[in-house]
Amino acid sequence: MTPQKTILVADDDHAMRYVMEQALGRGGYRVHCFASGKALLDFAGTTAVDLVITDIVMPAGSGLDLLQTLRTRYPTLPVIVMTAQSTLSHAVQAFERGAFEYLAKPFDIRRVMELVAQALERPPPLHPPSSGTEFNRFGGFVGISRAMQELFRTIGRLTNSEMTVLIHGESGTGKELVARAVHDHSPRRHGPFTAINMAAIPGNLIESELFGHEKGAFTGAVARHHGHFERAKGGTLFLDEIGDMPMQAQTRLLRVLQGGAFTRVGGTETLRADVRIVAATHQNLPAAIVEGRFREDLFYRLNVVPLYVPSLRSRREDIPLLADYFLARAAQQLALPLKRLSDETLSLLMAHEWPGNVRELENLIHRLMVLTPQEMILPHHLHGPAHGFSPATASPSPASPPPSASPSPAPGLPGGEEKLEESLLHFLEIFFASPQWKKCDNLYDLVLHKVERTLFSRVLRETEGNRVMAARLLGINRNTLRKKIQELDAESKR
Image 1 (tube, rainbow, N blue to C red):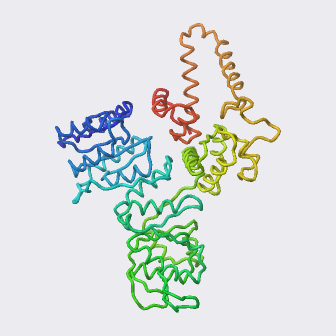
Image 2: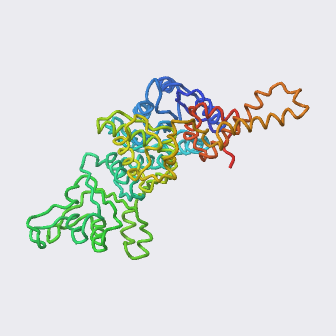
Image 3: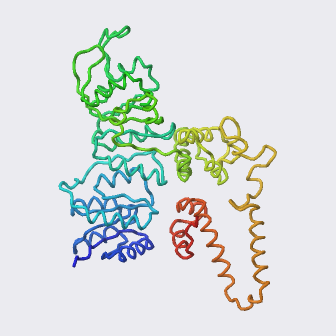
């Protein structure tokens, strides 16, 4: 008979410990839960352990510190890291310290069970990761959406790799930010990060900019010029908008990627290409290949590890975090008092399509910090060509008073509070029209349960099951939301 596997769980949230204990117990595992990393370590010193699952943010010590200690004491022990405050820095540090996987809360418990099975089946590493690595905190990368968490996770997995990366994404999504993150958390982090925009350089100068040129190589070449491949030696060369590279330069770049060497324009000396290539594009390169504008063999050389940066409209739940981040940064840069967005203004930002993506949001916040005279940024401050919001979607008509002048209707309820009251009165009229009402002794609980269940189910449906966004909309914390969902059986009904 196969012995039971022992799993230790560290999380300061009692509800989370209970859920994990019940789920893992039903899966046939022996489970021990702890409210702190220290308690888990004390127990691990007294018994054989097969797997550890730990939260990151705990009052009595970081889960990342626990992970590093476990790496030192038990190098082959698999550890799954989970957190509700998921950032790129957390994801990268978790993988750098040897985590088997990184999970952003809230998560599907079935996914946890799959990862547990995979972690327990995986053979121990031949060369366990070393501890004591120095980490750089990467600022400006904000996102709690599923798409961003997947991006963070992939960047984290590239920590010890020098593979070529191709970043796909619309203009303004932050592709250079991703490229810098890949560099900053790579073995080449101490080397230079050199960026070149293919779309900003005349076609006849691209080869010179990339590979350099010798004196006299062409008219105007009055001295030897070191190209970006030389300047980026030992580091990362970021080729932005690679889809705009002319075919002749594509051919030369392909030869360098294949052979690992190049010569300056007009030169004969062979130089070694000691760079890691990270490229980016907003174009559909497979379509460009079909149209004859991009080399297929170069595409496959570049697309070794594809990274997809989501558009802002596809991760609207990140907008409040991004807005707060840009407000704080603009206030610091401009030496201005910190301003805040009203709930109505934030709702408008959440509904906007953002064709310019994160760059458009950042520019808008910067302008609002400068041009808004009040501390609170209201919807009518978005009106006008300076901010790019149309009157139909950004603010009430000029004849209407600002939102602060009159109470707003309840969000998502046509007619606001009066309409809601009418609906409840209608329900009570039907209820009291029945003779059975005299036998009821729990009307309050009955109505409250029905209203809460309907409300929570509808909010989860409208937010597509995103509990972070649902909790913000309801004005409650995620622990309360999770408990209510369990009590009311109020999962989203599509």
